[in-house]
Image (cartoon, rainbow, N blue to C red; front, top):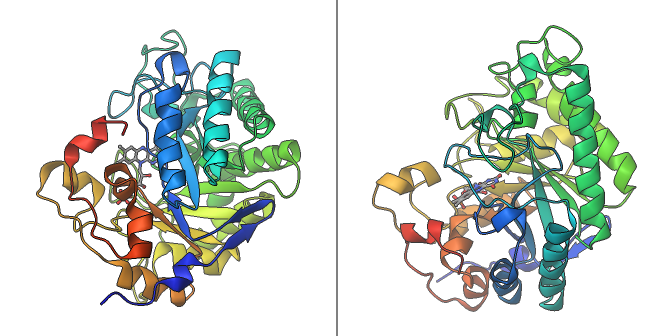
Length: 359
Ligand SMILES: Cc1cc2nc3c(=O)[nH]c(=O)nc-3n(C[C@H](O)[C@H](O)[C@H](O)COP(=O)(O)O)c2cc1C
């Protein structure tokens, strides 16, 4: 028999955001927005999850208002939506209205791919890709402005907050990580200086959106270039990064791990979300292999099964490791996953072809 999962169905409030339960849809790139414009199919896709009791939806990564923001990346991304221009904003407004009408909440993940964007790829092939080592002061200022414009657009059309993609080796993370930031000025060097771009960005965004409008920040140890990479080798290093970001205005840390239940540092069972909650004093969201026996990368190549590991999710939640529980593949493959948890039904089987569909 399933354990009492009612703690996961308690409401959660953060500033102006109130959600009815703790289940969140993790950001997932879908590549279904030609010319950067999300259409009716994208709205229907998110609405289905809102109708089926997903407490909060974080959208796929959405390009910020700069020519270098998105292009082809590790998976040859095309048709990635953006958060600027009349057509894209009208498309997003319809998405927000549909999700709200279905009783849901929705926050866009603002994305700049940095050096992971392949040079010369659309939608702006002539833009140079941004890598911390060769960015000028003007580049840095321009990108911060681009995030601000996009965040203000998101707020204006009715989104319930903003989420920053600060993980996986993309632009923000590439400043944080020593493997991609060898600057020796105020934007690089020790951890405090490597954190400066993220901190200044969050401060600027907080000033632009005002108090009470939630800012989520995705953070990860792992990078697309290197799954074994560590942003923070020690708890003390992690404390410096998340402490500075919390002071700058982050409300919730979206802690991206590949397996949510793995200890983050030797000598303790605490997962990364638990550490960040403890070190930052801010709410955290966990993610990674909830509902599956294999993590994302392995699931492309190895037989993978849907499983019920909610007992471990609940145990760590009750121990105070995190406030929110995010689902990636589970909600891609089974839009009714949260509803099925609530009413005690079996989940859909694992289906790798779902990565390429929008249903
Ligand atoms: C098809 C697909 C696209 C993804 N795109 C993004 C993205 O745009 N931004 C992001 O931060 N993570 C992205 N992710 C990672 C997920 O948000 C999530 O962290 C990961 O799938 C692990 O969770 P899971 O084990 O529940 O699937 C993507 C994952 C999948 C499967």
